[in-house]
Length: 115
Image (cartoon, rainbow, N blue to C red; front, side, top):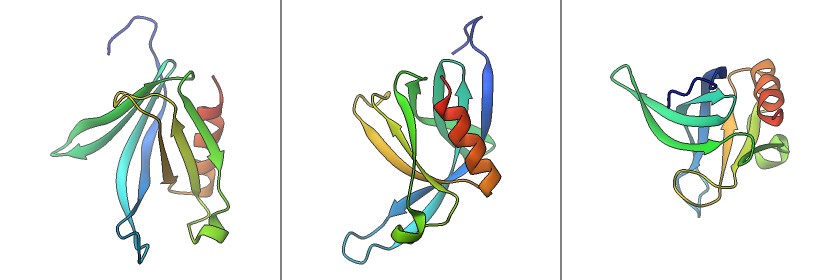
């Protein structure tokens, strides 16, 4: 993780949207943390004041973001889509994230789009 050329670009908490039941489509939100470095995105959760890495991907090569039609999907306006074309888990993944505020969403979208 420690490389002399690696620097922290942006970090903070967001909520991960989880669909609990495919039939009822009940949504829940789980707090996660994004740690964006100039060459790596780390996704973590916090337990007992320690960050536990759940996934990571090379940035910008395997990270992209997209806007969502949140109102059509019944999601908060601060929602956006994070895609990892290749992650630590070895496969493509996409997750719907909800920023804490609209300005946080705009900052994440801008920062994750720069590469």
